[in-house]
Image (tube, rainbow, N blue to C red; front, side):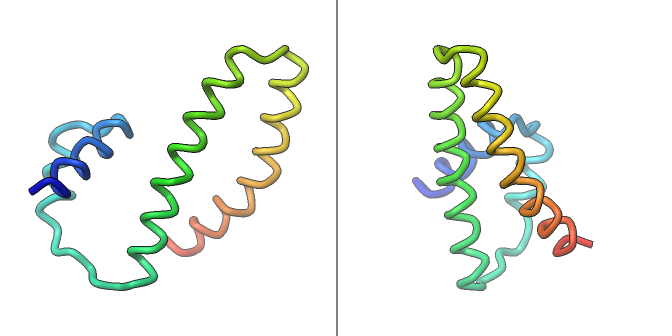
Length: 87
């Protein structure tokens, strides 16, 4: 039960609607160790990005720009890989 509540909270933090959360919760879980590991890494990355976002709010504009550029350069290939996986 606690895991379910944590999962719902995580989905709410991702700005999902209650209907979207309900659909996800009703889906039959996939028991792939690789998928579980990827989901854990995504949740961890989301936490790190939110932390970085807080730090950036106090950084100088030049530093904000440099950090955003660096993240974009690293995220573009990852997004392309995910798009390929999902297509």
